[in-house]
Image (tube, rainbow, N blue to C red):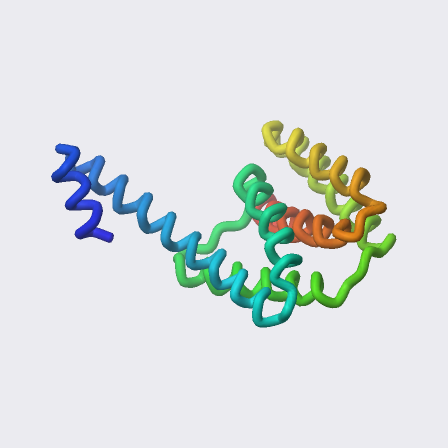
Amino acid sequence: MKPLSHYLAKELTLSQDEEEIIAYGLFVFLFNGASIALMMSFGLILGCFNKTLLFMTVFIPLRLFLGGYHSSTPQKCIFFFTTLSLIFIIAVKYLSNSFPLSILTFAAMMLSLARNHQTTHYKRQPVLIVSLLSVILTYTQSYHYIICLAILMSLLLLNMNIA
């Protein structure tokens, strides 16, 4: 990434600081792309690519807006993310639309709303409320449990960070 960021900085006549920012941005882009590609590959191998795609489509924006636990190194991050995502993707493959999962998701969201209110993370509340509405509004849909699992994974990471 250094050669590419150096080339871009030279072509765009950027400062050393701006070159480092480009290098970091490229690293984050490639790292996140590799993580997503790895998860989609697992979904393909497990025969649930479409469900994995829906799961990741719900999970990634929630993770970006809610934040949560962060590993100390990129290697730990990809290991933790891959392991946890794989568990949830296997659950997506074998679970069906169920009332207990909806109740668990609802309870986790209420807990998260309460904890975020106490820790003054007010920007997270609208995201949690929209997530809650999506759980309620999709209850009769066949993909409801996938949305619940993606929200649960996001809430797990969020609450690991707040504790």
